[in-house]
Image 1 (tube, one colour):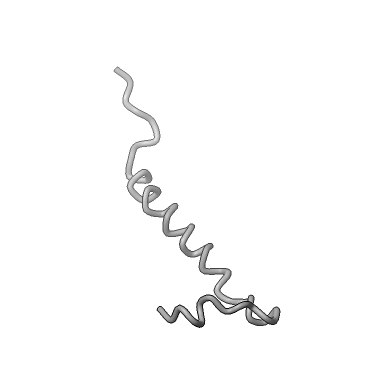
Image 2 (cartoon, helix red, strand yellow):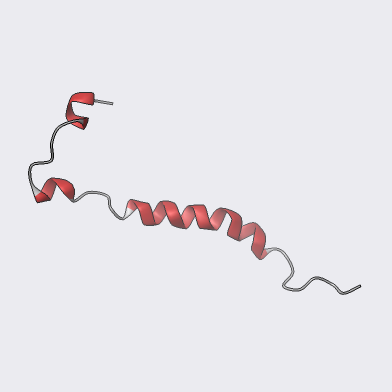
Length: 48
């Protein structure tokens, strides 16, 4: 990690535009991790 470039002040609006969409991909993955195993469970538990 280049600490000098990391701590520089953002001068223009164009520099602020980056991978803002990456958060949505990370969120989708984090929701899919428990979602896939939960989809394998039955919708209703068998009654006793």
